Length: 304
Length: 257
Ligand SMILES: Nc1ncnc2c1ncn2[C@@H]1O[C@H](COP(=O)(O)OP(=O)(O)O)[C@@H](O)[C@H]1O
Ligand SMILES: [Mg+2]
Image 1 (cartoon, each protein chain N blue to C red):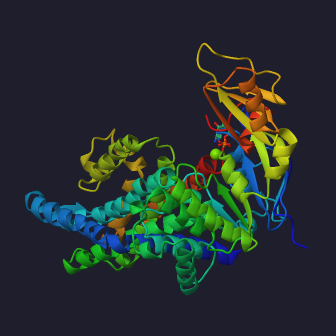
Image 2 (tube, helix red, strand yellow):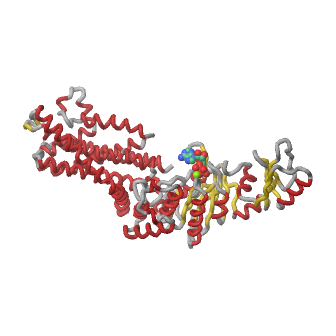
């Protein structure tokens, strides 16, 4: 039987008196793609570091690929691919050397390492830059190389800590497409993100994290039906013509610059507002997203 | 287990070999530094100083200075890799973090980095020993042990240097390093005999690690090996073992948080 890639129960990480991860439960299935969605400081990276065996667990249980991170660190890491939040590529080496040297750490022979490097440079569309220095790469390319590096050992579990933060849309889409391919090959992915669209794109299942705790869990579609309505009507009234929309829709959420009205029929609700003579200065009907789930659960937005 | 303890550090050494392939000029140029000192001071100053007395025998100033320069270059070779480069990998490029999510552990990484510093230092000491031989500055068969002694000096400073580096907060902190290594280079009997120092200063000089390296090297080059040479070896081994254990603990505190 294949062990579950990650099983955590009541997992806790404290730094001195500060609790970064506060008793979370996780259970990943082999082959699935799982996301931890949460704002900065939620405890995502701290969790990832415990899973990658480089951060001792303060309390609770953690099993990674069937092993204990403390006792079986090297054996676990041999089957793990890690993409940290901050790229830590070897700037003294070329792209190809980065991959080859890293493959050697996993015990590949030089010739196998060379073949692996070429294959992964192809997979991440970096083959033209094979002989370049890392410093010459754009942010998106560095990220792709870091992902390529995490794959040199053909890992069973790949940890991706905010894989696309700070990248432009084009670079993000290319990355998502590559990650999607990995997922199709059956590699288990565990990723963190504070972009709800990233979680929606890539995750079969996700947990929403806030202040070290898991506040919700499920598939993206499930979470939306569970916690919010199908549609959201966003309205902004001209100053002097504010109108209290409380009671419209199932729930309303006043934000600094606009008000969100949760309703299963956005157009209908808007028509009602207009009929009653409260035409907003601007309005937008959209599908509810994970962002709305987070707002409903915590009263705050994901990306400040 | 035995295999991993050798194989993993070996791959860390390989990483350094690959990274220095384009920087071979940096490696080779450092080889000439002690040679310049030898000719500038040993020969030039030697004309003014004349012969010295060593264990009752007359020796030239160049014979006196050369072993000291060999020990100092072993120190400098190790210091460079295990301070500046070490800091860069630890705090800037975070190369060590990347290594530690592979099967490598902290002791493998440290063993590999130390071994690389040894290889680099060993290369300098062997080439300099060649220069000493060519100029007749070696008068004893004990000198065949000089490369080993240079490795011992190198590993002692590699261990101490990396330990100190784990406390550095920024690049400015490395000014302190020069405040330590420059006086060591000048004052550890590299250029003057211990008897030249005022009597109150002698015990201080004798406490410093480079003094033991310099004196050991001189004993080997000039064939004056006695019990004190064993004392030097014991001192350097002890420093290495202690600093080596402490740096592993510091690294775990910094990297496995
Ligand atoms: N090494 C550390 N020492 C002290 N506090 C830390 C350390 N690492 C993280 N934290 C704190 O733990 C909290 C969670 O951080 P992190 O896990 O990085 O969150 P996220 O990745 O979700 O943004 C933050 O408040 C952060 O400041
Ligand atoms: Mg983070």
